[in-house]
Image (cartoon, rainbow, N blue to C red; front, side, top):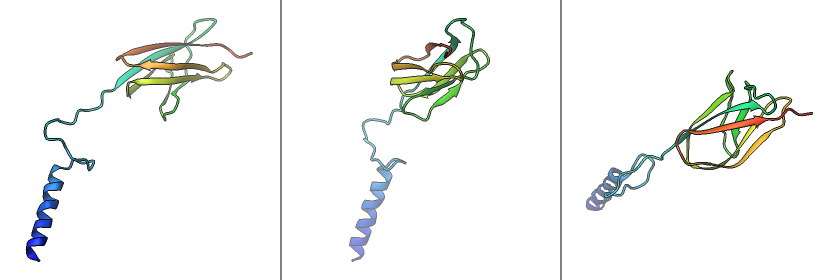
Length: 119
């Protein structure tokens, strides 16, 4: 009985020593690589006048990520996984702007969004 308990504890100890913090077993030949992320920046302007718009809500559809433009109409998103996204810009008394299938694959992707005043 003692031998079985000691063997069971030894097997559990070996299993825990090869487990990572997230509970997955590490592969001895390959190290875990971090997920690469990028940043997306841009600005929002009035369609007619070209004036920068401050306080515009810019969000990435399907995520909890949203930000607001600064006084110069600039915005940025950090630590975005590369992929294809829909980006929505909305502002009081302006029509929403939707950028469909925005392909965020390269670092420092710069967007220029123009909002048209609603009638």
